[in-house]
Image (tube, rainbow, N blue to C red; front, top):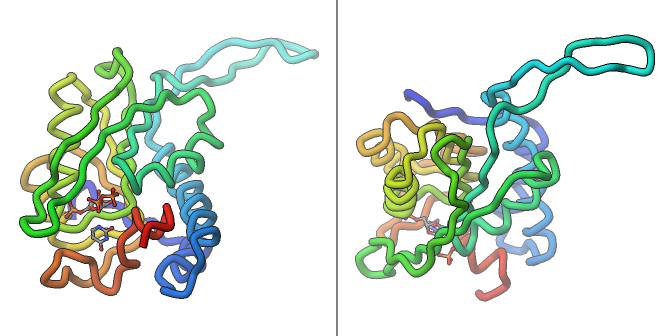
Length: 208
Ligand code: PRP
Ligand code: URA
């Protein structure tokens, strides 16, 4: 699949097992999301552009590097919020926007309720965060929004992806690089990912 990276790592496999387990507490669920997000951040950031700069060590001049572009994280509310701190730990100067989308449980269509992103998105590297890529409706809608603001360097990072969601993304936004910690089998008739981990927002915030 073009532009789809499945991040295969023993620490992800171990923490994904914690997420999938229905007996996992909210506290342990959150901490596993945090650690997986950390590993995903390392993987996505391999694509970041660098600019060389001359610096002086205490001994002599040498060449170092800095990130060429501002990094902007955009969690899709609510569940995407759980992934933010795992990214901010490694990119502490990232800006953070928010996109509020909620799936209608009958139609599975995303309903928009909040948008707030930094002004200068066009020249930034923008990372959308949402643990679940199910039908793909929310991801496609969020990307439509940021593309209208001129974003060119765009990544979508999730924890669990379903084939339906990836197909929808490749149809509507084939240029966006997708990173996932797991590619699951299918959706059930209510649009939940199987085997999945249930409702990521409810499990993150204890609203089950
Ligand atoms: C979940 C999830 C995604 C969306 C994925 O959010 O966090 O945003 O569903 O489904 P899709 O690919 O079929 O659009 P939800 O709408 O349940 O909102 P929440 O995070 O507030 O619980
Ligand atoms: N949203 C979730 O939180 N979980 C799913 O399995 C699908 C969509």
